[in-house]
Image 1 (tube, helix red, strand yellow):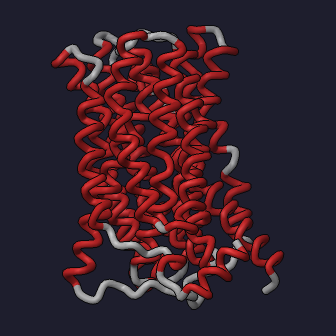
Image 2 (cartoon, helix red, strand yellow; image 1 turned 135 degrees about the vertical axis):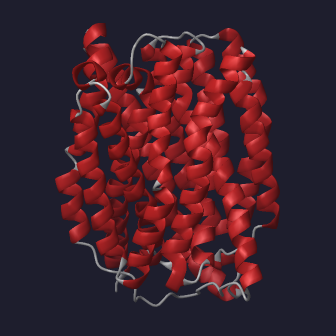
Image 3 (tube, helix red, strand yellow; image 1 turned 45 degrees about the vertical axis):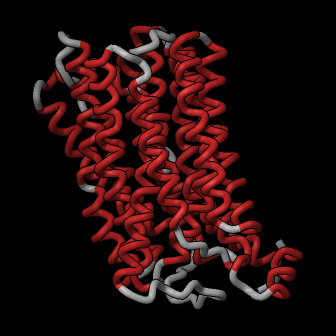
Length: 432
């Protein structure tokens, strides 16, 4: 295959994985952005705190079935192929989005409303549990050896693109619609807009080649024992858990800005747009840097800077409570943390044996997300409620990030550029 054909194929693979992964995260993230409004739709409006907690609990329900989806769809991808698993997970997510968007309110159908919403969320969680593993493995397996970090970084970048689009849609809807209409219908419109990409996504994914049986150049030797594999999994869960808590605190910032800092909806969504746009750029940049300098140095530098920035940035935005502090703090936190994830995804995926790669990666991702992602927003809402301190999310985030820093110190280096002979390294750099 020529270099030009290789780049076209890689670009098509990235597009196929990104459009599917992006839609699935768009829905999850839109739900988080509009949690106040969704709570008012599906739960009694008498108590604002109970309504918000009900919405966040419904949001968390989507995490319960992630491990099941990771195991079943991940096993399917490892045995049958990445492509059919990606098509199945995407179709399930698209159907669940439409059901959730069209479910009548609590005032219209009573307790059936939250029941239907929870069932839709369970379906979404199952689909997303399998989607992450299949899409991530596919991205890495389709990439040239010296561009694995760049390719795998689109796993994280697609999530951030989805969050940026979700926040932008939320911002535009709150700007264009009258307040009463936006409170009632904006989140439904946002979800239905996302569902419009389903036919296109299915078409793109149906046109990509399978990678399950491709041989890998410079493949990483799998862990030599069960103990080595368990160690890798534990470290990955800690790193992924720290990132999950950070991600869902970032996604909670629109709610945090409105409910805790008493900022306008428009400013809260604007902060989310800035945060997630920065994460798109830094995630891809982190993957590119990890192709040149290794996965571990990029992860360690990014995580450490993020840990240092958390408390000062939260103190700034909770004290000033204005446009500059909210947008500025989101910018700094996103910039310092984002470089980690392109390096992490590539490092973990290429370290796993191919015969169990999708299932293992999906389970690592989904189990840590199910435990920590599903609980992060209810926990910090509860912590703010009982302490009365808007700094509660910052302390929770600091503890998680420090655990991630320690895990990175023991994480193995897997970048081919750090393992191949010098001559091959020079050749890879010259063709990068």
